[in-house]
Amino acid sequence: MGLFSKDIKSMDDLFVHTMRDMYYAEKQIEQALPDMIEKAHDPQLKQGFQTHLQETRGQSQRLEKAFQLLGMQAKGVDCPAIDGIIEEANDVAGEVENKAVLDAALIAAAQAVEHYEITRYGTLIAWARQLGRNDVVALLQQNLDEEKATDKKLTAMAESKVNRKAA
Ligand SMILES: [Fe+2]
Ligand SMILES: [Fe+2]
Image 1 (cartoon, rainbow, N blue to C red):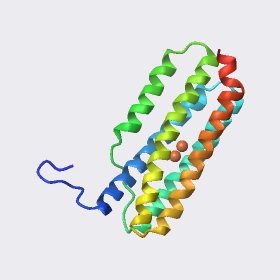
Image 2: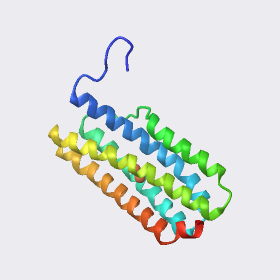
Image 3: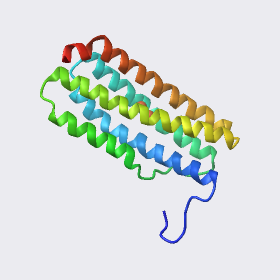
Image 4: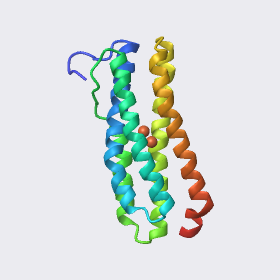
């Protein structure tokens, strides 16, 4: 944001700003996941994080494709929200001693990330549709579907065993 002028003047600007926010978020998540893979104790959880790391890389590529369709260079913009969610996850994980409890904490942290992504992609899809960019909608929808599926898998793992082992 400029000091003397407001940089977001139109809905198009707001859309691009939020696309950059999300691109930055995916890159931060890509960097955070290897640490979560290492910390996870349950093999299924470890594998789940591993799978989502691959998906996350693909999601960044879809965003790059979307920027390309918009005639722009893919560029991130600081997203304090995702930084905060990841920072809190690291803080809590650092405090947990018991392995089973740590897995429950990791799932909770991962679901906070997924829910952030779900809300952002939901908004971006609505705006892209409104702006008549159905080509971009299709790419964003694939990312949203993966985030939702990941969130569901995490809920299933937590409720079927991880929470019980931790309690
Ligand atoms: Fe993602
Ligand atoms: Fe995700």
